[in-house]
Amino acid sequence: MKILLRLFICLLLTQDVGACTQAINTDRITVAGGSVTEILFFLGMEKHIVAADITSNYPPEAKKLPSIGYVRNLSAEGILSLSPTVIIGEDDMGPAEVVTQIKAAGVEILMVDEEHSAGGIINKIRCVADIVGGRAGAETLIIDKLMPKINQLEALASINRAERPRVLFILGMQNGSPIVAGRRVSASGLIAMLGGINIMDAFEGWKPASPEAIVQAAPDVILISDRGLAGFGDLADLKKHPALRYTPAIKNSKVIVMDGMEMLGFGPRTLDAAIDLAQEITR
Image (cartoon, rainbow, N blue to C red; front, side, top):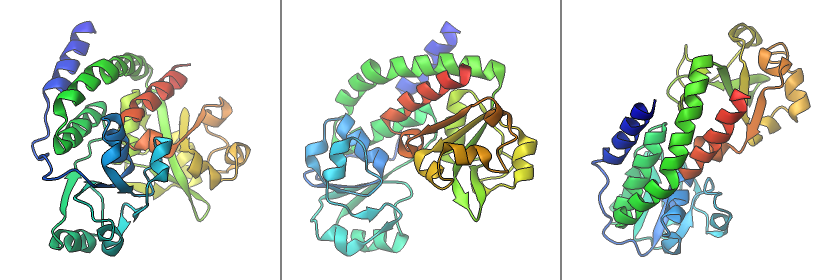
Protein backbone atom coordinates (compact mmCIF):
# COMPACT_ATOMS: atom_id res chain seq x y z
CA MET A 1 0.00 0.00 0.00
CA LYS A 2 2.82 2.46 0.85
CA ILE A 3 4.39 1.82 -2.57
CA LEU A 4 1.07 2.54 -4.30
CA LEU A 5 0.67 5.76 -2.33
CA ARG A 6 4.17 6.90 -3.31
CA LEU A 7 3.43 6.17 -6.97
CA PHE A 8 0.15 8.08 -6.67
CA ILE A 9 1.96 11.10 -5.20
CA CYS A 10 4.63 11.01 -7.90
CA LEU A 11 1.96 10.94 -10.58
CA LEU A 12 0.21 13.97 -9.10
CA LEU A 13 3.45 15.91 -8.78
CA THR A 14 4.51 15.28 -12.39
CA GLN A 15 1.16 15.68 -14.19
CA ASP A 16 0.68 18.98 -15.96
CA VAL A 17 -2.07 20.82 -17.81
CA GLY A 18 -0.65 21.91 -21.15
CA ALA A 19 -3.33 24.47 -22.08
CA CYS A 20 -2.77 26.74 -19.07
CA THR A 21 -0.76 29.77 -20.10
CA GLN A 22 0.14 32.89 -18.13
CA ALA A 23 -2.30 35.76 -18.52
CA ILE A 24 -1.04 38.94 -20.14
CA ASN A 25 -2.27 41.11 -17.27
CA THR A 26 -3.64 39.91 -13.91
CA ASP A 27 -4.19 43.34 -12.34
CA ARG A 28 -8.01 43.07 -12.54
CA ILE A 29 -9.26 39.47 -12.47
CA THR A 30 -12.91 38.59 -12.96
CA VAL A 31 -13.81 35.02 -12.01
CA ALA A 32 -16.55 32.80 -13.44
CA GLY A 33 -16.65 29.75 -11.19
CA GLY A 34 -16.57 29.18 -7.44
CA SER A 35 -13.69 26.72 -7.51
CA VAL A 36 -11.46 29.20 -9.37
CA THR A 37 -12.25 31.90 -6.81
CA GLU A 38 -11.41 29.49 -4.00
CA ILE A 39 -8.12 28.59 -5.67
CA LEU A 40 -7.15 32.24 -6.18
CA PHE A 41 -7.70 32.86 -2.46
CA PHE A 42 -5.70 29.69 -1.71
CA LEU A 43 -2.84 31.11 -3.81
CA GLY A 44 -3.01 34.50 -2.11
CA MET A 45 -4.24 36.33 -5.24
CA GLU A 46 -7.51 37.63 -3.82
CA LYS A 47 -6.45 41.29 -3.98
CA HIS A 48 -6.47 41.06 -7.77
CA ILE A 49 -10.09 39.86 -8.00
CA VAL A 50 -12.50 42.65 -8.96
CA ALA A 51 -15.66 40.51 -9.37
CA ALA A 52 -16.90 36.93 -9.27
CA ASP A 53 -20.00 34.88 -10.11
CA ILE A 54 -22.62 33.84 -7.57
CA THR A 55 -21.19 30.34 -7.10
CA SER A 56 -18.14 32.01 -5.50
CA ASN A 57 -19.32 31.63 -1.92
CA TYR A 58 -16.06 30.52 -0.32
CA PRO A 59 -14.16 31.81 1.50
CA PRO A 60 -16.76 34.12 3.09
CA GLU A 61 -14.85 37.20 1.88
CA ALA A 62 -15.64 36.18 -1.70
CA LYS A 63 -19.32 36.95 -1.10
CA LYS A 64 -18.42 40.64 -0.74
CA LEU A 65 -17.11 40.84 -4.31
CA PRO A 66 -19.26 42.48 -7.02
CA SER A 67 -21.33 39.79 -8.75
CA ILE A 68 -21.33 39.01 -12.47
CA GLY A 69 -24.30 36.60 -12.19
CA TYR A 70 -24.33 32.86 -12.67
CA VAL A 71 -21.35 31.15 -14.28
CA ARG A 72 -23.46 29.62 -17.10
CA ASN A 73 -25.61 32.69 -17.70
CA LEU A 74 -23.27 35.66 -17.81
CA SER A 75 -23.80 39.12 -19.30
CA ALA A 76 -21.10 40.67 -21.47
CA GLU A 77 -22.18 44.22 -20.62
CA GLY A 78 -22.02 43.64 -16.88
CA ILE A 79 -18.59 42.06 -17.05
CA LEU A 80 -17.09 44.62 -19.42
CA SER A 81 -18.34 47.48 -17.23
CA LEU A 82 -15.88 46.28 -14.56
CA SER A 83 -12.89 46.76 -16.92
CA PRO A 84 -11.30 43.35 -16.25
CA THR A 85 -7.83 42.64 -17.61
CA VAL A 86 -8.52 38.90 -17.66
CA ILE A 87 -11.43 36.56 -17.01
CA ILE A 88 -10.60 33.17 -15.52
CA GLY A 89 -13.50 30.73 -15.81
CA GLU A 90 -14.48 27.16 -15.23
CA ASP A 91 -14.93 25.13 -18.40
CA ASP A 92 -18.72 25.50 -18.38
CA MET A 93 -18.82 29.32 -18.27
CA GLY A 94 -21.20 30.81 -20.78
CA PRO A 95 -23.32 31.20 -22.74
CA ALA A 96 -21.01 30.83 -25.75
CA GLU A 97 -22.20 34.03 -27.42
CA VAL A 98 -21.30 36.05 -24.31
CA VAL A 99 -17.81 34.54 -24.26
CA THR A 100 -17.46 35.50 -27.93
CA GLN A 101 -18.61 39.06 -27.22
CA ILE A 102 -16.10 39.49 -24.42
CA LYS A 103 -13.25 38.15 -26.53
CA ALA A 104 -14.27 40.50 -29.36
CA ALA A 105 -13.96 43.40 -26.90
CA GLY A 106 -10.31 42.48 -26.43
CA VAL A 107 -10.53 40.96 -22.95
CA GLU A 108 -8.48 37.83 -22.38
CA ILE A 109 -10.50 34.77 -21.31
CA LEU A 110 -8.83 31.66 -19.94
CA MET A 111 -10.88 28.58 -19.06
CA VAL A 112 -9.71 25.91 -16.65
CA ASP A 113 -10.34 22.27 -17.50
CA GLU A 114 -12.27 20.11 -15.05
CA GLU A 115 -11.44 16.58 -13.93
CA HIS A 116 -13.43 15.14 -11.05
CA SER A 117 -10.70 13.48 -9.01
CA ALA A 118 -8.08 14.32 -6.42
CA GLY A 119 -5.50 14.58 -9.19
CA GLY A 120 -7.89 16.85 -11.07
CA ILE A 121 -7.98 19.25 -8.11
CA ILE A 122 -4.19 19.41 -8.09
CA ASN A 123 -4.09 20.01 -11.84
CA LYS A 124 -6.73 22.74 -11.57
CA ILE A 125 -4.69 24.53 -8.89
CA ARG A 126 -1.58 24.27 -11.06
CA CYS A 127 -3.47 25.60 -14.04
CA VAL A 128 -4.75 28.66 -12.16
CA ALA A 129 -1.27 29.17 -10.71
CA ASP A 130 0.23 29.12 -14.21
CA ILE A 131 -2.32 31.69 -15.36
CA VAL A 132 -1.44 34.12 -12.55
CA GLY A 133 2.30 33.35 -12.61
CA GLY A 134 2.47 31.65 -9.23
CA ARG A 135 3.45 28.06 -10.01
CA ALA A 136 6.40 27.83 -7.61
CA GLY A 137 4.34 28.99 -4.65
CA ALA A 138 1.52 26.67 -5.67
CA GLU A 139 3.81 23.63 -5.61
CA THR A 140 4.85 24.44 -2.05
CA LEU A 141 1.21 24.75 -0.99
CA ILE A 142 0.31 21.50 -2.73
CA ILE A 143 3.09 19.56 -1.03
CA ASP A 144 2.64 21.09 2.41
CA LYS A 145 -1.13 21.46 2.64
CA LEU A 146 -2.81 19.14 0.14
CA MET A 147 -0.67 16.02 -0.28
CA PRO A 148 -1.18 14.93 3.37
CA LYS A 149 -4.93 15.19 2.81
CA ILE A 150 -4.72 13.17 -0.40
CA ASN A 151 -2.76 10.48 1.44
CA GLN A 152 -5.40 10.37 4.19
CA LEU A 153 -8.22 10.25 1.66
CA GLU A 154 -6.61 7.42 -0.30
CA ALA A 155 -6.21 5.37 2.88
CA LEU A 156 -9.89 5.85 3.75
CA ALA A 157 -10.99 5.17 0.17
CA SER A 158 -9.05 1.89 0.19
CA ILE A 159 -11.10 0.73 3.17
CA ASN A 160 -14.33 1.72 1.44
CA ARG A 161 -13.34 0.03 -1.81
CA ALA A 162 -12.89 -3.19 0.13
CA GLU A 163 -16.36 -2.84 1.67
CA ARG A 164 -17.95 -1.49 -1.56
CA PRO A 165 -20.56 0.87 -0.08
CA ARG A 166 -23.34 1.72 -2.53
CA VAL A 167 -23.80 5.49 -2.72
CA LEU A 168 -26.63 7.64 -4.09
CA PHE A 169 -26.08 11.36 -4.65
CA ILE A 170 -29.23 13.50 -4.78
CA LEU A 171 -29.03 16.97 -6.30
CA GLY A 172 -32.60 18.00 -5.54
CA MET A 173 -36.21 17.41 -6.57
CA GLN A 174 -38.06 17.68 -9.88
CA ASN A 175 -41.82 17.18 -9.98
CA GLY A 176 -41.65 15.06 -6.85
CA SER A 177 -38.79 12.83 -8.07
CA PRO A 178 -35.21 12.95 -6.75
CA ILE A 179 -32.63 14.20 -9.28
CA VAL A 180 -29.68 11.83 -8.93
CA ALA A 181 -26.13 11.58 -10.25
CA GLY A 182 -25.30 9.23 -13.09
CA ARG A 183 -21.95 8.82 -14.83
CA ARG A 184 -19.59 11.67 -15.79
CA VAL A 185 -20.81 14.31 -13.38
CA SER A 186 -19.01 15.88 -10.43
CA ALA A 187 -20.90 13.78 -7.88
CA SER A 188 -19.84 10.57 -9.59
CA GLY A 189 -16.22 11.68 -9.33
CA LEU A 190 -16.72 12.49 -5.65
CA ILE A 191 -18.17 9.04 -4.97
CA ALA A 192 -15.15 7.45 -6.66
CA MET A 193 -12.82 9.56 -4.48
CA LEU A 194 -14.57 8.16 -1.40
CA GLY A 195 -14.10 4.59 -2.58
CA GLY A 196 -17.85 4.10 -3.01
CA ILE A 197 -19.93 2.76 -5.89
CA ASN A 198 -22.25 5.12 -7.73
CA ILE A 199 -25.39 3.02 -7.89
CA MET A 200 -26.84 5.11 -10.72
CA ASP A 201 -24.02 4.71 -13.22
CA ALA A 202 -26.29 2.99 -15.76
CA PHE A 203 -27.01 6.45 -17.24
CA GLU A 204 -25.04 9.64 -17.84
CA GLY A 205 -25.64 13.05 -16.26
CA TRP A 206 -28.28 14.18 -13.78
CA LYS A 207 -31.71 12.58 -14.11
CA PRO A 208 -34.90 12.08 -12.08
CA ALA A 209 -35.15 8.57 -10.62
CA SER A 210 -38.34 6.65 -9.89
CA PRO A 211 -39.06 5.15 -6.47
CA GLU A 212 -38.77 1.69 -8.01
CA ALA A 213 -35.30 2.39 -9.43
CA ILE A 214 -33.97 3.76 -6.15
CA VAL A 215 -35.45 0.99 -4.00
CA GLN A 216 -34.03 -1.61 -6.39
CA ALA A 217 -30.61 0.08 -6.32
CA ALA A 218 -30.64 -0.14 -2.49
CA PRO A 219 -28.14 2.60 -1.55
CA ASP A 220 -26.17 2.10 1.65
CA VAL A 221 -25.42 5.84 1.79
CA ILE A 222 -27.27 8.91 0.53
CA LEU A 223 -25.37 12.14 -0.07
CA ILE A 224 -27.27 15.38 -0.60
CA SER A 225 -26.43 19.08 -0.58
CA ASP A 226 -28.07 21.36 1.95
CA ARG A 227 -29.71 23.20 -0.94
CA GLY A 228 -30.97 19.91 -2.36
CA LEU A 229 -32.38 18.94 1.02
CA ALA A 230 -34.45 22.14 1.04
CA GLY A 231 -36.38 20.72 -1.93
CA PHE A 232 -37.64 17.94 0.33
CA GLY A 233 -38.28 20.19 3.32
CA ASP A 234 -35.99 18.85 6.02
CA LEU A 235 -34.22 15.60 6.85
CA ALA A 236 -37.35 14.10 8.40
CA ASP A 237 -39.29 14.83 5.20
CA LEU A 238 -36.57 13.26 3.07
CA LYS A 239 -36.70 10.08 5.15
CA LYS A 240 -40.43 9.81 4.48
CA HIS A 241 -40.13 10.20 0.72
CA PRO A 242 -41.55 7.09 -1.03
CA ALA A 243 -38.45 6.73 -3.20
CA LEU A 244 -36.13 6.68 -0.19
CA ARG A 245 -37.90 5.49 2.94
CA TYR A 246 -37.28 1.77 2.34
CA THR A 247 -33.60 2.03 1.39
CA PRO A 248 -30.82 0.68 3.62
CA ALA A 249 -29.41 4.23 3.86
CA ILE A 250 -32.58 5.51 5.55
CA LYS A 251 -33.00 2.44 7.73
CA ASN A 252 -29.38 2.76 8.95
CA SER A 253 -29.40 6.58 9.21
CA LYS A 254 -26.69 6.98 6.57
CA VAL A 255 -27.87 10.26 5.05
CA ILE A 256 -25.13 12.89 4.88
CA VAL A 257 -25.92 16.55 4.18
CA MET A 258 -23.17 19.00 3.23
CA ASP A 259 -22.64 22.24 1.33
CA GLY A 260 -22.94 21.53 -2.38
CA MET A 261 -19.98 23.63 -3.55
CA GLU A 262 -17.81 22.08 -0.87
CA MET A 263 -18.58 18.61 -2.20
CA LEU A 264 -18.81 19.29 -5.92
CA GLY A 265 -16.71 22.41 -6.57
CA PHE A 266 -13.46 20.42 -6.84
CA GLY A 267 -11.38 23.14 -5.29
CA PRO A 268 -9.02 22.62 -2.32
CA ARG A 269 -11.79 22.22 0.26
CA THR A 270 -13.35 19.34 -1.71
CA LEU A 271 -10.48 17.25 -0.33
CA ASP A 272 -11.60 18.12 3.21
CA ALA A 273 -15.20 17.31 2.32
CA ALA A 274 -14.15 13.99 0.79
CA ILE A 275 -12.18 13.03 3.91
CA ASP A 276 -15.16 13.83 6.15
CA LEU A 277 -17.52 11.87 3.90
CA ALA A 278 -15.16 8.90 3.60
CA GLN A 279 -14.89 8.77 7.39
CA GLU A 280 -18.67 8.87 7.76
CA ILE A 281 -19.08 6.04 5.28
CA THR A 282 -16.58 3.82 7.11
CA ARG A 283 -18.41 4.22 10.47
